[in-house]
Length: 178
Ligand SMILES: CC(C)(COP(=O)(O)OP(=O)(O)OC[C@H]1O[C@@H](n2cnc3c(N)ncnc32)[C@H](O)[C@@H]1OP(=O)(O)O)[C@@H](O)C(=O)NCCC(=O)NCCS
Image (cartoon, rainbow, N blue to C red):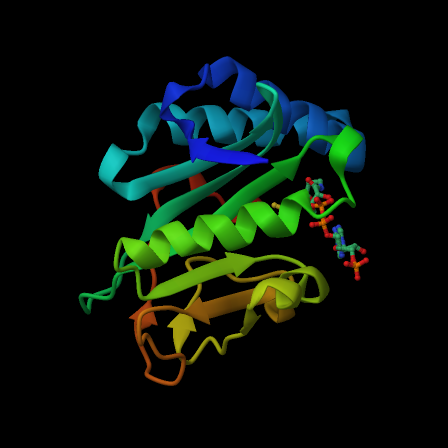
């Protein structure tokens, strides 16, 4: 499996991967919603606030992962992992964990101190995430699943110092995602 920055890939192919993957797992309307979210992220988020990686094998796209900047009043260097998708044909073969682990290693090389995500703790704990209290990082919206608010420190970052309210990039400013 090869991991490359999303920039050299056709944006429509990336959006199609997300739409197809989420339609397959969560139904067509959720697939369309996540495809539209990814479209907004790729179109609107400034490049310094977006990191994305595509996994391929023999030029076929297996999966994709996006990280977008999180901002605090303090100068913390933090990104949010979301969304990640592995083509249904390749799910359950380790591609997701490889994408997440390799993506996070890239962030680490860039000096990022904290990665957050909002998802299934059972899955993300396999790749180094742990639950984080709202007292340390207050999510941008009320969380429907507070147990899914997860973080991983990098480069000496800490999970025990209160960072206050976090702001996400514009496409995630929608209560439905939280
Ligand atoms: C979730 C997803 C990215 C995982 O990638 P993957 O390549 O299928 O997963 P991997 O093969 O790396 O990991 C498999 C392990 O994770 C577990 N797992 C996979 N999907 C899971 C999920 N949604 N919840 C909990 N555990 C999950 C498997 O049981 C397996 O556990 P094991 O190693 O103990 O056997 C992929 O299944 C996917 O794209 N799903 C649809 C979209 C989605 O839900 N994205 C995540 C939210 S943004």
